Amino acid sequence: LNRRLTEFGTTIFAEMSALAVRTGSINLGQGFPDTDGPEEIREAAVRALRAGHGNQYPPGPGVPELRSAVTEHQRRHYGLEYDPDTEVLVTTGATEAVAASLLALLEPGDEVIALEPYYDSYAACIAMAGGTRVPVTLRPDDGAYRLDLDELRAAVTPRTRLILLNTPHNPTGTVLTRDELAAVAALACERDLLVVTDEVYEHLVFEGEHIPLASFPGMRERTVTVSSAGKTFSLTGWKIGWITASPELVTAVRSAKQFLTYVSGGPFQYAVADALRLPDSYFDALREDLRAKRDLLSAGLTEAGFEVYEPAGTYFVTTDIRPLGETDGFAFCRALPERCGVVAVPNAVFYDHREQGAPFVRFAFCKRTDVLTEAVSRLKGLR
Ligand code: PMP
Ligand code: GLN
Image (cartoon, rainbow, N blue to C red; front, side):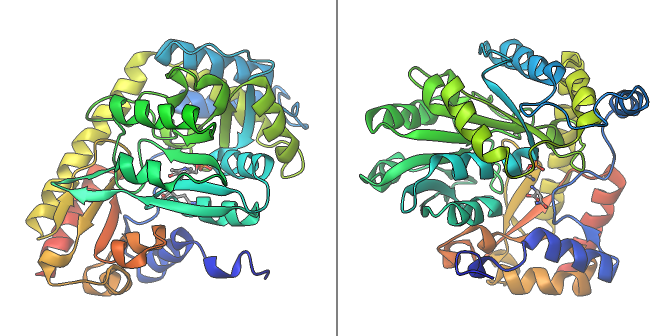
């Protein structure tokens, strides 16, 4: 294994899901729903492959039906206008979208500012692209994690090429506010930076609202917006993602993407086009279902003795384990299956400054209510 990758080992999600299987534990570690997305959308995929739609290589940028549906979605939810022919690229999940963006846009040695704690693939992809990551830490404060705009400003150097943003934010559940996003946008314009913004949790917002960074003045032409069907439609295995950006940025990202996977998921692309056109009631029901689960798990974790950072968005809740007399989230998560049959993820893996993340542990609540109730009752036995 080359020197760029050795520091990353095995992704925590694979490690923790394997631990859950091995110990027969409830898996609140890796974020994936335990019920599949809408039946009508799964049926649409079956229909597509029966009809011979997408069984052979789809077009490099994605099937036109999905590219149109992505532009309709951006218009309907955010009033953003994109051209389906030149300003959309379908990718193999958000993961490839981020990877291809970094591979396409970075020169070796370019600095990338990423919010810490960061989704684990960001660090590895920055490294694979030869970039240097510059973490800006979200700090826990009064029940929520916040971005320090002065720290963000101070992190920009002449070598900074782009900001890799993520809102709603995994793992903290922070949803950046309009003012925070306006400040990020102003900084990007002032210092002539690109922004890759990972908005995969755009529809999972319980407090406040999701505002795409691309909607701020001066941002449309310097922003690559990333999203995916995984979270919004509970179809993480399909790995259908996309970017929206200016024609120049889409062309650049496609230059990298064409040599990674070229294309993927033909029949699923047609079905995701249908999914994006579901009525508002679908998106509302998804959010309200997850809000109830957030409340259930947050209350249960609080009762079990954790300090809970109740998320404004995503399907993760970050907790502080120090009230339980614990300080090391890694050790805690490795022992948790044995102690009570539950799997969680140590937030330290999402930090360069590991000590900052040490006492924090993330639980996913995209699970059936009975599963969450059972997990809570097990966790209450910890004390
Ligand atoms: N970005 C973030 C912030 C995520 O949490 C995830 C997935 N869990 C991804 C990207 C990857 O999305 P996909 O499965 O569409 O590749
Ligand atoms: N995004 C999911 C999480 O944060 C997992 C995705 C993965 O396993 N790569 O848990």
